[in-house]
Image (tube, rainbow, N blue to C red; front, side, top):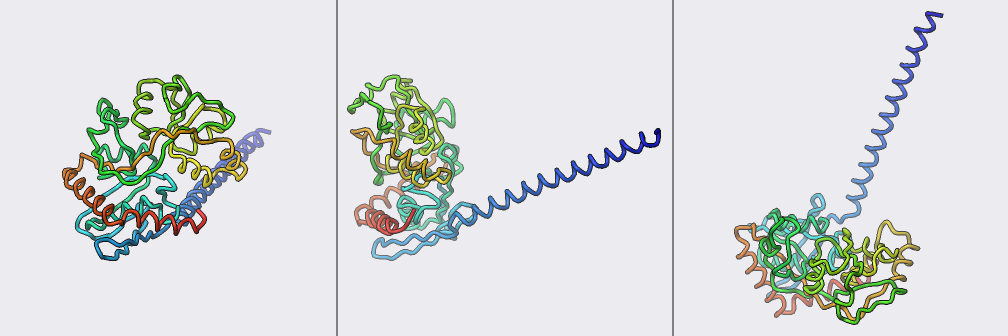
Length: 331
């Protein structure tokens, strides 16, 4: 009996150790396999190259961008270099949509035509803003008009225009309120009719000067989301009364939502609608970081390119070509 008493604990402990070792090995294997699959999916999903083709000043351009760790480098090796941060904002711009959207095509064309090597990185919008306001990239895009009084969410006690300078405008689109179809609204174009209403916004987005001023003064009850898709889902599930944004972006995000079932996509789309009239038409802008010692030169060069593209019809050519080619393909 004394011998068994000594042997049994030893056997038990050995088995316990073996079991723990096996579990640790199993967990490590699952973790490693998960990371490997994630990396494989990421690599296969995001395009390795992006082509930008346009005509400017009587010259044909064919620029190829290469994907380096989900950052895209165009016109590599040029002496002048510029870095940009952007977001997933389809159908205007996105890593995995056709040609990465017309905003990406136009942006690359504008800057490579001026002799720049262009590096574009995709981040969540809040980080995109932070990268530019802190000077870690030279330009953030696309941006709505920034009111001079708009506070910075990145550097407390300062204004966004302390850190960013807006370019001349490029084409954009309408911005509007959206609601559930069964929700009766008093809105007829006057935002003051919505005092105290629960409204979903994307954190860090500029909307319209009037809406943002009322929001900053606590006129509405605001619910922040990381993107338009989350806002749309909140609206459809009656968690907010309205959301604000670009309707084309909101409905596109529902249509292409990777984690939504087809039933959920249909239900969400069919349950919400645009409130008339739209709040306004918003042009898009490039926001140049004032942390760049040469920001004034970069801003002037960019503005001159925008004016030249607009005058020569290159802007419209790029937008129309991208839309026409991509409308023929599934997104």
